[in-house]
Length: 69
Image (cartoon, rainbow, N blue to C red; front, side, top):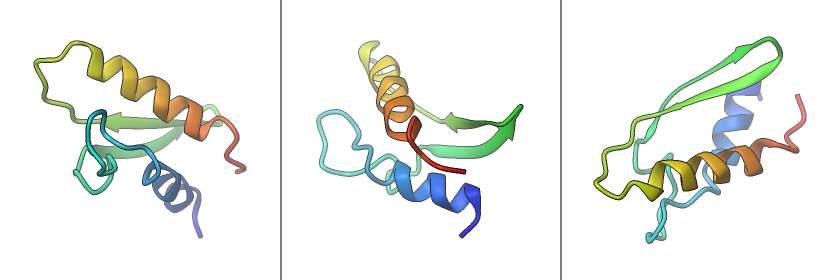
């Protein structure tokens, strides 16, 4: 399993706030890349709730913080 696939699998555990669906199945993950040894995840979020982007950022960072490789 590649590093990108490993990250994508981990992101499937991050639910969109207020829903029981994850951000991958919602199609919000646009790109996963690496810069200076760190994963960069690009999300495409359309919402009028200003708290959603920050909540998702925190959830993604928390989920990926202990990911090996």
